[in-house]
Image (cartoon, rainbow, N blue to C red; front, top):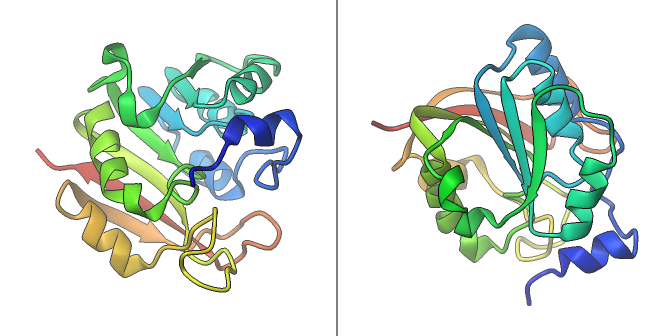
Length: 195
């Protein structure tokens, strides 16, 4: 059964809400500012989108939960960020093929595992030619079994199998910092869309 994200936001049941951008993203941006147009699917409260907006030309945060979009819009604007209610799997035409970057942090681990191939296609469809995916994947959320979630775990081998047909792995690393309790459980990657 799909997760009712809107109910989670309305009821304040948001264990993923940490009140700040991903430490791994903050560290990356301090070394390598992201430029151009960035899509943030599953943006939630928009903390990561605002961090990206400090360096990028434009950031579009999308979420399927209207309450998440309202929450993201309630924060002061940092730069060229905006928030829309939209579904990554059914992007409006104006958002397709128009981004230099997609930032992944909490969307991939939240979707049903059966949707992961469609996720890869959706991200590829959002990017311009030679666009890049910058991602923090949650390898080990500490679940009892792989089907428990969200968040759903993922292995590096599964990431390779899913993304290699559409993307070239440029770089990967263990982030130096993570939210408390996620240390050593996340994996960062930069993937370039295949031509």
